Length: 105
Length: 275
Length: 120
Image 1 (spheres, rainbow over the protein chains, first blue to last red):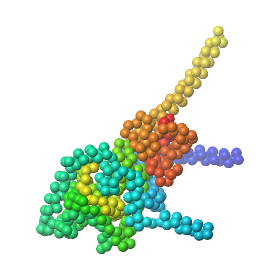
Image 2: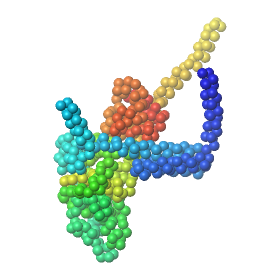
Image 3: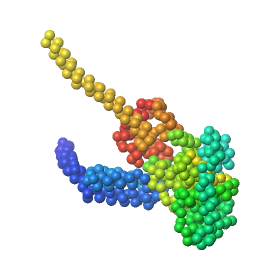
Image 4: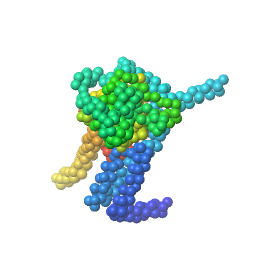
């Protein structure tokens, strides 16, 4: 039991060190990857005809941040945009059946 | 006996949840509005929110004394009557010379398998005669559409869903769009204009769905401009934080097909003036 | 004499330690409510007034119920937070926006709004 705790504790310490390291190293490549993921989520939502108009502006802001060299912020904004795209797609899946419950009968 | 009863109940339940014909939908739609606004006559819904909001109705009557859409209508008449470069006119493209026909739109076109709106056919007419198409949301398109609606005032909406599975599919598609929640704010058209009609959103009363398409295109004070029905669809999409679809996209045409069918039998009174 | 001084010193030290702590807790709660109110009234954030009557708010809508007697309606504050976070939890066709899952508000913003609404 105690040993298990030790391992978890050690792992946490090692990971927090590593993760902080990666977080600090947000660079152009990280931005491009995050941006690409956001774009594909946006595309999936748009193809379902469920795109939100919040996604484009977030990506635009991300682009501005990246241009200014603030990749941390750019990655954060792209991640947010991706999450909006994913939520929009989840909405389309929910509504695929859900709308029927609202029909006036 | 008990078993039979249970089976019958089960069938009834399934039937109740199952698909309804467009005509059943329309009657249920009217019934819903009658129950929600027992003091409003069905034919008054052509006046939109003003049918259910007496103080706003008085203001609106004053606006209608000097209709803000009059300029656009005059422009539309002139455009409509001016021949194309090849000498032909819009009158050559439409039944009855394009006069008094608005009530028959949108319709299902068996040849293309698509729902055709009057704006779509205005541009088809232009292109067939070697002219560049107009943009669909406002400007000259809204002006011509306004004039064509005006010549049809008093005619009753007569949207037909022919016995063609593609027509029914288009109707069902529009119905699905109408009742589906979308955008970050998660509102469907029906959330505001069916379930919450007559309620206040901030300082504005939500207009009832019945009669919505009778008065388009409209001069909208908020726009300070004329706009087509599809311009309004796009505006509603944006308000719920959804990305609007292009005017005259298949989805919007199908939506117009469903929505106008719900108002079948009501008088065309476009163009209108709205807040 | 010495004892008195010591006692005074101790109480001063304790007071300087404890009093500000007590103050800051109250102040923090106060400012959370104020911040929450700001978010609730902000048209680009909670925009609660679009649909709910709230004491002190102008041009309120009435699509949803007036926000009154919240402690009675939600004895457990967590239930109120859940309703603000995701109205689908209670009703999957609710016309209230799903502020949390749809990321219209952050978790922290929802916490602050909950603090404010719970005072109503």
